[in-house]
Image (tube, rainbow, N blue to C red):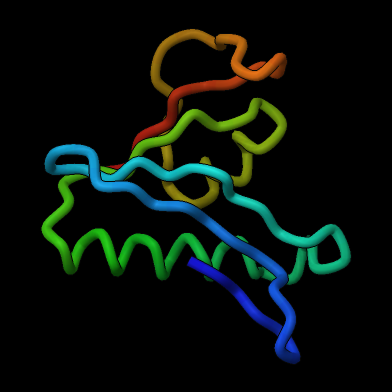
Amino acid sequence: IGAFRNGKAVGCLLMKPDGENFRLRQMAVASSQAGKGIGAKIMIFAERVARARGAGELWMHARESAAVFYEKQGFVKEGERFEEVGLPHFTMRKK
């Protein structure tokens, strides 16, 4: 999923089918566009696509620094914090 402003990419999200669910990966928004609602719009679109394809749940390994953003989008932390690619993460899910 890509977000564009004036013909330039300003955000992205990879979404991969995982059984009856979808795994979200590699969410990013250009630092110059942070706080403008682009990430939230990407997540809304991702949910619509997942629902249209019959997904029961979205899940991800979210960086600890981004967990509050995902909680605002309705995701819930599952389990304990863990390290991935040298950074603290949480598994997060949304039904």
